[in-house]
Image (cartoon, rainbow, N blue to C red; front, side):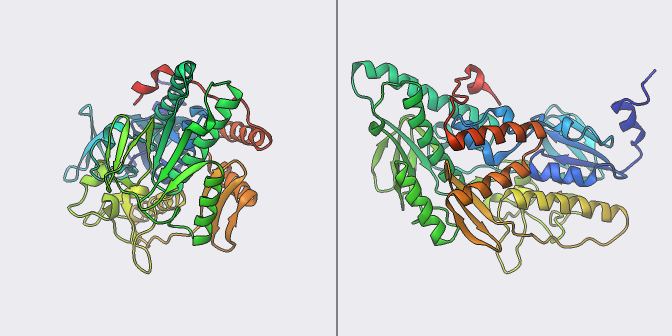
Length: 433
């Protein structure tokens, strides 16, 4: 006899309710599910990972500042209090709009009344030959672990070769946006601390971090003052910045610029942009917005659909005044919440309302005690104050008390000193999904 208090029994009791399927367990998908938790709907979250990843801190996992578990949290645990929410581990292959069916990769079909597409984005390689094969993107937890392995293995290999003479290493970060700036700064710090604390027989002056960007300044979405500050701080940390450089080829141990220059590399970190062209969202419409994002109506319904919604990085949401809203975590969270509210309004027979993005500002950390923040009512904040603002905001959005506590302790320790840190080469990282 089934336990009347079991999750299976509770969810079965809700079978008569409208079924909302949320595809994706990122910021937008989790926000949408929270908006539907304990409401008169049945919700299924589908994701190929059973955890939510705090993407803004991926670079710290990649550069051995945090452990993977510090920025990941089980989706089932997040919604343990909501009997109307069920998690399904799997990858979605397609949507059958006519039959209102979500088709999984294993052939399973799941019916829906409404579906929320929150599949996020992936690295955009812009057709650069060799980039998708040899460059290292940073958009999943597996990417972060793979990059950390690559960096630490390169340092260990160089240390072994240093017995026979000086060894030169060149790590290249492609892209001068927040991810590129944060990764370049953290990588520079990792190299210095690893050489000093772990006793590597390497000359720090022969281990280079190069940041290249097609633009003429870093952090193009920030004011000029913030860009200049970031460039000065990275330069002080030893990062070589090259502007107006277009990468046209990436090889196993080199890259080539548009002017024909060939640069020998130890590893290439790709932080040049995002696209949804190769995700489920990229198949939902004959037309697309920037980065392949699916066009949506003002209420976040996919154009031409009555029951398919797109939120977060997957959606091309037109902004007031022209253009589109940015692919940022606050935007993903707000759109996920709005999408959930609109589904409830439709189910209640009410008219939907247009989405309005509330600008919470943008931030980027450059290194320990250095960051830039553009805040709506406080202008540009830099230095330690900006760093503390960055820490506070990220701790606020991080899911799970244990994760917040672990990260806070780690960051507090690093403020005063640099601990040994999780500089571990995990053998299975190369094969992780």
